[in-house]
Amino acid sequence: MEDNAADIYLFQQALVRAGLTFDLTVIKDGGDALAFAKSEKKNRESRALDLVVLDLNLPKIGGCEVLEALRQNADLSHLAVAVMTSSEASRDYEKCVELGVSRYITKPLELEDFLQIGEIVKQVLLESMPGPK
Image 1: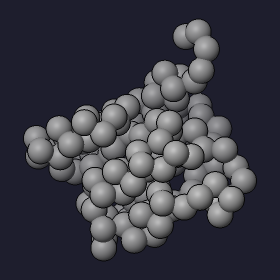
Image 2: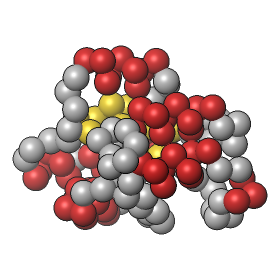
Image 3: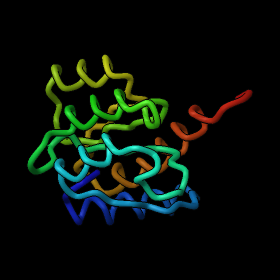
Image 4: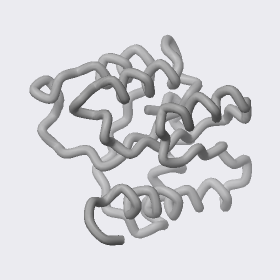
């Protein structure tokens, strides 16, 4: 759930660089993200979700509200969520931790650092898989 086209592109490149195979669905504003977070399983695409990557600074509705809705939805509450945001505010971090995010990633300014996010995503996915690690 991200609204910045450049960040979406760099995120895709980071996933490729990390060797991840993925189907990426992008939701670009908080209103649509909130509707997704509140939707019932029968109203969503049939693909299984492995991870939600959420920006806190979405247009219309903020990411924390979307995260709360994800956690309240019985079908989605188990999902690993990585927050990837420009916010360095401690209140945002604390709220996300309280809501059980797997990682809180502050968007790096340097290209090489941004491309390392794929490795972080890979680690989150490994940690969220059921069974022995």
